[in-house]
Length: 168
Image 1 (cartoon, rainbow, N blue to C red):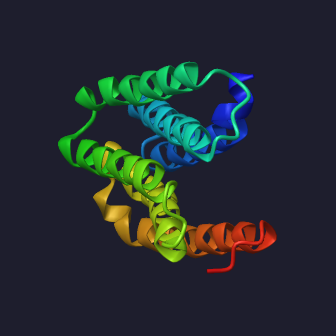
Image 2 (image 1 turned 90 degrees about the horizontal axis):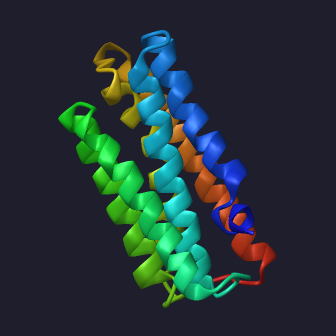
């Protein structure tokens, strides 16, 4: 049941993006595994918390909050291992996810802002991954990938809203 609430495949895909980018700069570097864990955990925490506020969960609300706290805490523990700039990006993304879930899930009139937050969180994964392995020489490529991811994710979120009948 928790796999459905945390959207397991989304977490794995997001983590794999970080891992692939890390390993494309520094093959089989252990920091790539750390990047995977942080991205996986933060994505799982955001998805789980989103389920709590959307009230779509099939398990007890207290358990959903405990899972979200577990994922965010686990991801944050690994931040002490990676470079400070990567940790700052990760904490910024966690803050974005918390703002999205706590504030905007309760207020649906800020639809485009909500979609921008989700898209920005997705777009920061390549930049985070490069900062984990200190691959600053490749930052222009990561920015291009991030812009593409932002556009794709924003479009995807907007399409979901239209599909659900939310058109503000």
